[in-house]
Length: 503
Image (cartoon, rainbow, N blue to C red; front, top):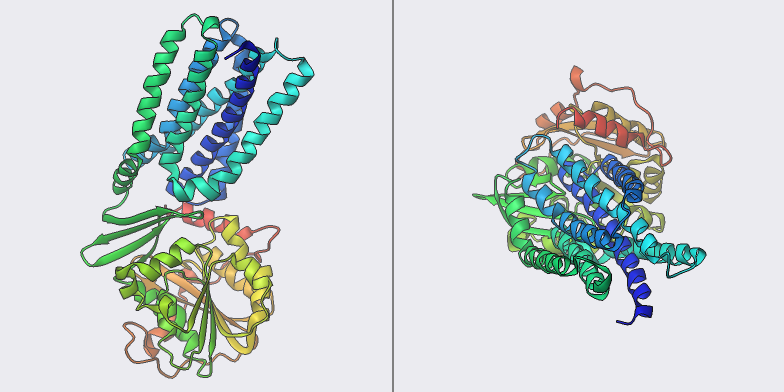
């Protein structure tokens, strides 16, 4: 490579360095959400620690006075090794060490410091090859373009098609490859060029082995976190889906959180659907928000008068799984394959805003409000949009977390529904896999009438059991709370605080 091409190589290195650096940050934040709970707190603290560590790295760069090019190559190799193996280390040790957060933030800090060293050292290497104004302009242009690329490909390409572990190894390889190319093309300026070339090759081979065996590593590390055999695992653009089996019992986990267990899910879904739909003998059109497993739809289709069921779930990976896996099809009784059912993969908030059709029964079966992206679906704004889709004598039912573990969260949902002039009927039910769980029915007028009896063939729900579900003992009585609004999302904070005490 001729001497006038060397600055171009170094500028391309800036692009790769910036892309890899942001990818490592996104991996750490996503992995923390998977393992510690999908919370805004996880991403916020990871980003804060990472950026602070980059600042420390930038400050430390002033102490590198000699052989800067050699130091840059060594740091690139270290960044590739630490960043590339970080997700494997965290997955493998999650269940075996008590102070997991210390390890997590320690790795984030080390990676951030090393990444923070890279750009200042590169600028000093390039300072004699460009005028200062051109140097700053070009370096930061490549830096920001690399960051943009990383932010786009991470959710759209890397997580769905590679997963966290393979993505980390892949970008670790890119980091070390930059070190190797710079070392080869600048070998006359580097006293220990042969040593660094050998270190780069060995590092690439080690990371390549990790990339090739990433699925095995992921499966093994995830098996340490579950007591049952993992029979399916996949990362979609939105979540990590894990399906386990022990004996005849299937369990679904999304981002590490249990969604249902096949031996008692009927208690949850019968309680979710039948108290409302049994009271609507003329109901024909039903809307289900969330519920991509088709289990709520299974219960709805037990009513022959239902003509259409529209299911809106964000994740196509979820609905496709429950339309194609034979064990899951048996569990949901082929509900998502029914000609009455239309499955729409879209963001619920956006979809509702553009609808005009009226529905007699609306089921809101979203995950718990553990972050702002889900919390917006529990706000007065969203409930007001749903109200516009509800027929005059229709009913909305909302899964509303545990009134025993999180009473403030539960009653916030109730208060938020009431804030948009809906009349509510709160109730609760015991589900062995989850404990005491809460639901709230809402309607435009206070005309709800308890069913005189429930459908025959239900495994759990009866008139007598529903009477008990309507009664709230003292430890689940209404708690003081605020309305959940888009501009404050108080429910997310309530939920985090209450569940943190039991997790």
